[in-house]
Amino acid sequence: MRVELVVLVKNTPENVEQLQYLESPADWTPRLETDYLETRLLAHTEEAQDLLEELQAIGLVFYMREERHFELAEIRRAEVLKTCPETQILGNHLPHEVQFDWSEACVQCMRSPEQVGPLVIEHRRLTNKEAVLGPRHELIVSEKVATRMIKDGISGCILRPVEDSPGGQPDSGSFFQVIVTHHVAPAFCPPTRFVSTDDHCDACGQGGLFLDSSLYYDFGVEEFQDINHTFEVFGQGAGISPEILLSSRFYNLLLSCGAQLAEPEPVLFV
Image (cartoon, rainbow, N blue to C red; front, side, top):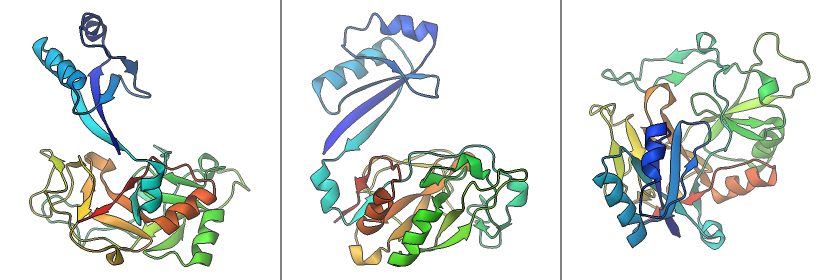
């Protein structure tokens, strides 16, 4: 495993000028689809520490996080992996046509209602994609993947058709939302490390969380099904969602169908 330190600063003319005078060597590049610059260094090294100290000394506001990168052999040995599709379909969701049941939601923060109606997304935006995330982090798969899931008996979920939006193009294919029915038990901190924000709810333990280290559980792999959700939901606002944990069997099924997935991280058991 290789651990990288990712440092972000706002991409403003003032910050760009200040970065030019840093003594610590770092390559600052624009982060795609954001107004930030980023640099990456090996974590826990003298170079990384020097950069952080210099940024603090000049008073530049920055954000940082660690990213873990695993060797192929480590991924192949893992029985459960944390990953999700690389592509997310933003916007184009018709919330007024999606029904939710709020009866089991937290009375304090109203997380998380149960979706009882189908998703409505333009199918043309899903064409030629085997797996994507919807606007609320819903897992959506193509008919090809759904057929394989049924044939192979993938556990921990049910499939619900995704409806095309009004005026959609005909013959754009069929797509299915993967409704995850299996949630694992709450994680423990430590050894799992969370960053908690003001949006975190003390009543239900959900929302306002960001995962800052590998997931560790004190129960065995037999507690997992082919697709699982964490008990916790991560992020803020409308985009909060559980982490998706996949068995190696389902992970390999998605890859064999041509799905583009984010870099996987093994779930470690202690």
